[in-house]
Image 1 (cartoon, rainbow, N blue to C red):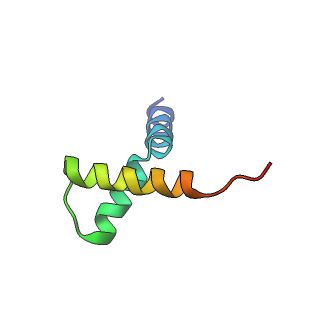
Image 2: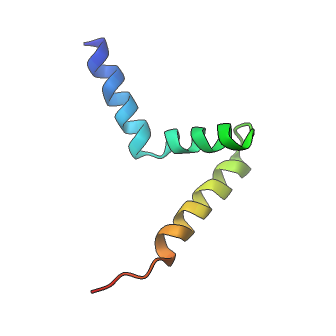
Length: 55
């Protein structure tokens, strides 16, 4: 049961971009803050919506 809970929690963190944010912080040597989260999320959203979609 614990393994199932851990798996679901890990899956939710991946879907919610928490794991990507943690990897971003580790890669850049930063500590968690509201400002860093905002800039991370804005850059991710900007990249997502700048790509042109065809058809």
